[in-house]
Image 1 (cartoon, rainbow, N blue to C red):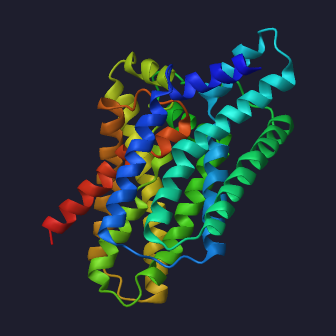
Image 2 (image 1 turned 180 degrees about the horizontal axis):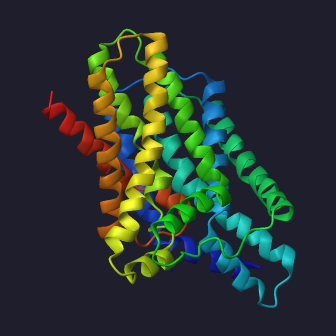
Length: 329
């Protein structure tokens, strides 16, 4: 049983568990930097526990949904190990990975900027543990109820409309992507409340930039190396894949920004034609930037798909758009 657990752990953290030391060194720097900056935010314990639970549960669900790790698990199941030992070690290793690389990052920031006690720290650990243990039950129940389509990643040949079909089929079979988009559209509705009392000419571009940061839509090639290899062998791949890919992200961005403008008009008023044009420019530029990053700089060396969701690269395009909008006045 220890051998199985070590195999999973080495796959996630490296042969010598070097990723653990590197990660905790970064957390120490972040904690010390925030502590020196003396940034303090009052966080009610119930909100602290809710944040830790929801964040850990979400990341654990993403980790369990990682097709790469599920494929590796299927290969290991062919070995002569007892089924319950295999799944126990898999969940233990995955939970350790989620807590040490994701939840620990959240706790580092929260504990650095708030006054906390041993009771609150222990409660946060308990909430994280409960979330890690609950998600596998829901996930494997989902696997029993829903039969996955093995061929959902097949790319049709040489026709743009088949690429669109792939995108919509991919979203339909990855409910967590749809959930993320739904959350983004919900954020678009409530952003005007957050910006209330601020200058509308300032908050509108910032809102557009925030809503363009739809991470799952920008990692189609990174999360599927087989798809990346397939599209690169197509004739004129830039035209046949990158153009519809850019238009697809542009469409999704425009939906979020349209919701934001409608909500802004209802709550604050003052939406102008110039703002609509800025929305179009930001949505299109962000889409093209995301596709160019995926085409020329796909993310490598990741272990779980949730690593892609939280990769720092996702901030490059929004930061660039914010800088351009600032320079443009």
